[in-house]
Length: 108
Image (cartoon, rainbow, N blue to C red; front, side, top):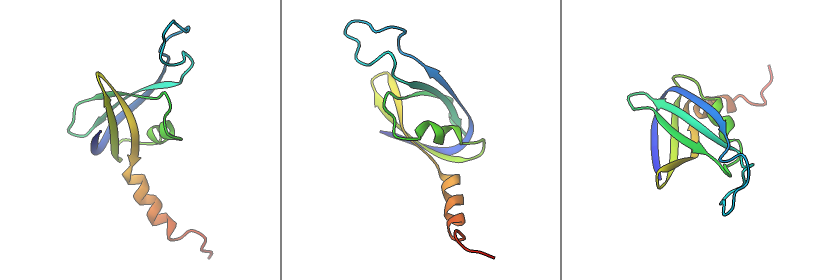
């Protein structure tokens, strides 16, 4: 597994399908949801990776909520020529939620 950390420059997510119809000896269903993610971290080249076929819950939502300038940590699993995103952590958001957690439940 490869882990990259840095400030997010941009991220785009596209829904893709491996094949329109099922073919003989196909290893996964043609209806499996897959997403192509293009992103760039500050000071690094643009990367392209896939999410799917069975990502952890809310992984795509975590990627979509990341904005320019957020510090993110991307974990990739290398599988031959394809790389899949295993985890995406928005460190900026996590720190914000930790600070917010201290005031949760307090009233004026």
